[in-house]
Image 1 (cartoon, rainbow, N blue to C red):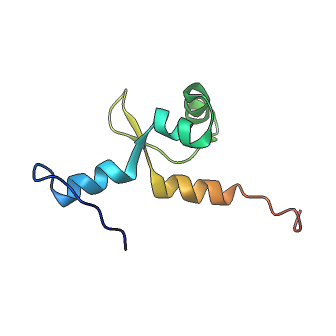
Image 2: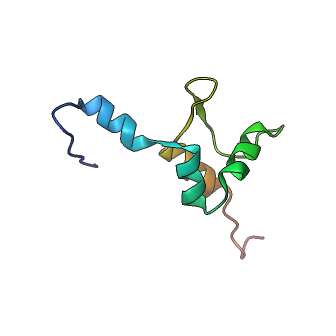
Image 3: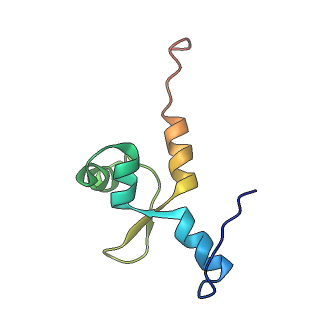
Length: 81
């Protein structure tokens, strides 16, 4: 179980959302790629990157757990290859 402190201005629901969702730029930094690479993955057909959440036409967010699952699915085990 993960605990997080939040200010009196935040509700627990808002704190969870802030912690669990990341921007395109944050995802790019996490994966050590340029943000344009993440955007290209998102707009490619078929889509190549992790699942994303379009909050508006210009605001795209990624759920950290979705990213973890996507990364785990890309893992290559040399012994099995």
